Length: 80
Picture 1 (cartoon, rainbow, N blue to C red):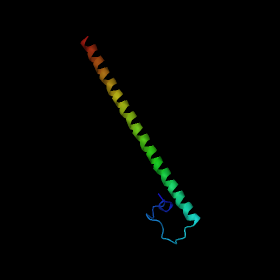
Picture 2: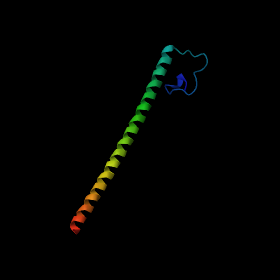
Picture 3: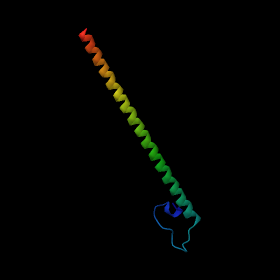
Picture 4: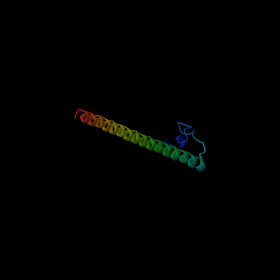
């Protein structure tokens, strides 16, 4: 990605002879860095959410197994 694309306003370089000031370049670079940081943060949040969902599913499975074991134990006690 070129510096002039960082703000998302242009897909092509500015026309020849266009004066690009240092301030414009610095602002574009700042916007680009901020966008990258937001993208990374979003990916991290998605990964954390997926991990939490997996943990919840594992806990639910363990609870179901425990309930099934309790039911089996109760049936054995009733048979005795």
